[in-house]
Length: 362
Ligand code: SF4
Image (cartoon, rainbow, N blue to C red):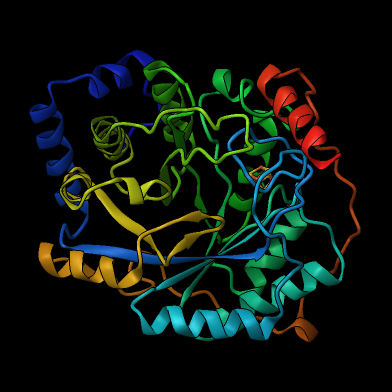
């Protein structure tokens, strides 16, 4: 396990002749993972839209004009019903996403903690992606039985500034650091196809691989360009780029679960099979990924049958956490108001999309 990869080394791997790259990645993959097992996760958008951030790829940002329907925080019962449905169709993990800048102590966070307790008791891995969190909030999530916290780096530090201006790269790293002060595993990855260079892709992998320990899970997303967002005109990423990115991720992070995430609807089964061979061993199931389309779960199960893959059982990599009930909690809400940064640099295309949205709404 190396934490000192340089961008040049990672770029050399990424640019290898494809057959060499696939062979090396598959060899490393087989040394640490069962190549015929793939984790199936279900992503639930527990609070959709109305986000104050300006991530240029995201239809949930309130400032862009997109067609998504926002909703307030779901109830614990709604989440439980969806988790049970996901479990019955083969999912071992539920990821709950809320379109928040950061977590705020209060009744909504308490409700999320209850969702975590409820799903952990269904013997499923529970993951949350709720924006930036403090150490105390991470501890409260851990105590409720959270298995993983997702917070993506999105891209290289340099290219990140071309996509997001409302919070800094360091804020992202600080949240990951807060999660690392608990027993909760880290899920962090990024998106390709946002206009970044191969150097930026390598830079993101260097940043992820430098974390010690490395993330237990790394989603590799292909941008789904949504009308109304600043990145609406980006062309779909090629399958070859996706395969190279998955294989390079596998080589620099041998133990990590590499997750094929957004953009799978644009990939053929042959393309996905190549990604599994190159080291991807996790997918998101369900017809929607937060707000963008995703293959139907039955189609995925047909693909698994065709390729001889089987869904991974939960808690293979790490034991199930215990759930502490709210009344016995050691940690209380502190009502903190952390100073997450707002770099505030101007991203022309984000400004243009914001202005266009204003004129449509007027
Ligand atoms: S990616 Fe998350 S933080 Fe960024 S705008 Fe979308 S919901 Fe908000």
